[in-house]
Length: 400
Image 1 (cartoon, rainbow, N blue to C red):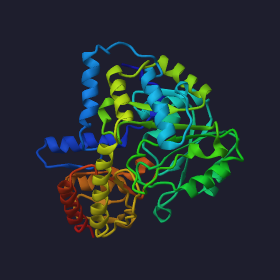
Image 2: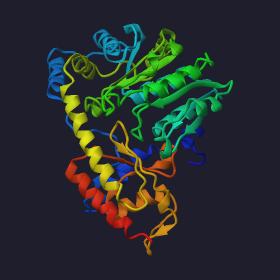
Image 3: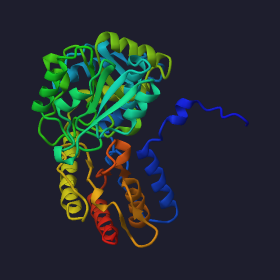
Image 4: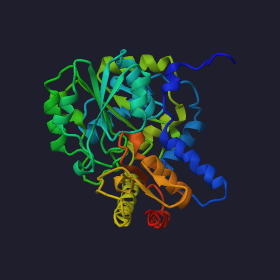
């Protein structure tokens, strides 16, 4: 083939670092090594029985046909009710669009909102796909970051300094992937007050981890009156209900934006899986007891990880308030070597070193806009986590 048939767009797109590390971990495992995978953001719990039973019932009832593009009416109503009940947000059913996961929801938004050259402020560290989704949609990602000293939370003043006449929206997650940081009411209020001076700037708030929040109360930025009619809230079922494989996400948005997103989705995937949507109705309208049990387990694991990794030389660890990640600053290890095949020049090198020498799969912080850090998921059993910490400590101890 004489000419490269691939578009510049796809050639410039990065592969998801989390998916890449998971695949590399599987390769090392296939070579006969006992790999502990702490790279993927996937709860290790099974979907609760009552949700699985709802899917079985939907199958038995023949709910196997195409669905409306923005979602079945029962699910859009359940999401609208959930927003009011749990978040204090007022999105009518016609302002809800159900998609094949929160990732598609964010991609739909980018395609529907961005013209060539529009800027998107992304609070960093950020989820790996944010930047590429913006870029492939013709937008310009503008990462605005904070370090471990600030608990990885970006101040209103820092955000304001990045706003230009080309800024279309601000994109962030709380609780945050990859840091586990949770923006407080006071911090979100300050951001909302600042953004009140910029009425054309929208806010896209990714709240997929809202139920894995150790602060006691999740705060949605859409509840602040200064931002009325300007916030798109993204959520889904994968984290809080252990439904990663079901591929079910959604947005609540101003009506014109919801209609634009539905129009965009109608030309790509159309309606989301009918069985998953029926199960989603039951998930939202049932007790959250299984979710709370899962959160309690993650909180115990968080303490285990903070204590264990906090003792590893060169690992600077803070106390994340949500999600299921530890995001240590590991820059003190740069320049060190094991005296053999490995010199740690950056977090990419460290992630490779940990996989090949300790057989623990993690993800480089560079993929999240934080090259001095490493993302370590604790969505694994306590026994696996303890073993992983021991392995990490051992091979880090070999660096000089």
